[in-house]
Length: 103
Image 1 (cartoon, rainbow, N blue to C red):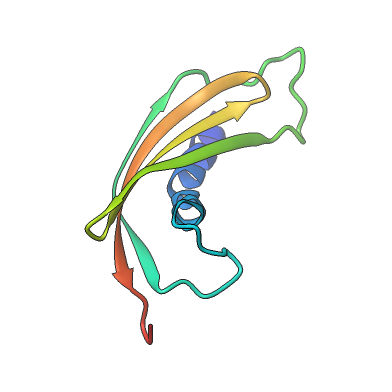
Image 2 (image 1 turned 60 degrees about the horizontal axis):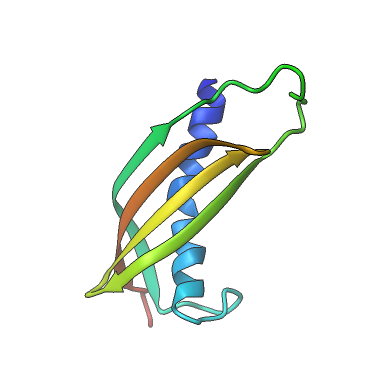
């Protein structure tokens, strides 16, 4: 359970960057002119235990992230973490957008 919680938190924080790039209509494969620094991350856990009838060691979590606000050097992202058809965690992350070195 702790491993699943740790994975959910890491995904919730890390996936705000690609969602911010997509929300800005930029190409993820190119250099991006800013770096993202996490300011605040809140995660709510609903149900972390794997279902015994369907649980497999190879089961993966699905993360859906959307960025609702990008303004004034900040972005606010919301993530949902799913295990098959179950919502296991939700999070909100506020990040600061800072110019990348050399940009």
